[in-house]
Image (cartoon, rainbow, N blue to C red; front, side, top):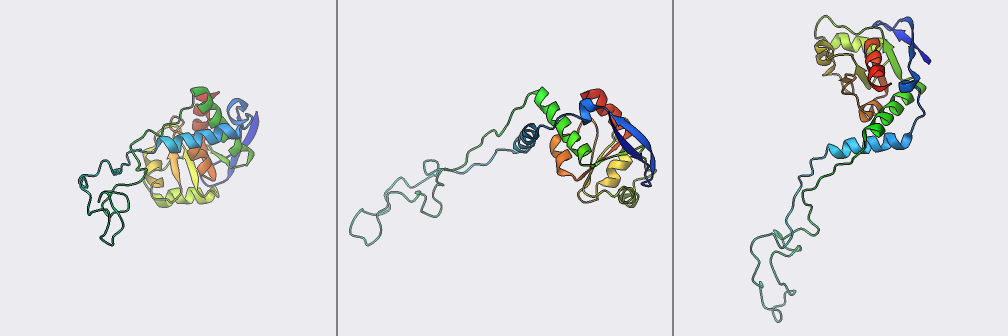
Length: 206
């Protein structure tokens, strides 16, 4: 069990907490983490791009001028790729970019990502994160107290005040134990997680 310091919203130490090694102390599998990031980015692609090849562009069925004697280069169709309005060579077509990973691999990748943050001292546990009102300024003050920039804030539940207060802060994102993913964990420099959220993560992934 790894011990981490617990902070309050003012950035002061208020105790320690033991993290479950089954989630926060596994052997980091960089290959699985890479696969998980590639999978998420690939699966976010729409794959709806489309351009027409010369066979799909209308018109151009007639040879524009005779083969020889005009002084022009020979041409067979005004829909050939070298013509304005012609077809596209190797035109993109709609496709599915989906990359598959099984559930066991996805869980292992997330554990590896969380463990790497613990090893780099980039996982900050706070005893509670509660805001009385929606105030970006207050949330920014909390982040400053915790010396966190480009942070992923994980709360146990969808806390409306925290979510809305964070929305306008650049490079800061919120998540819950059910919505965290490898890409967001690795993308942000610091992961701020509440004690309740740690318990929820351990309950699901341990």
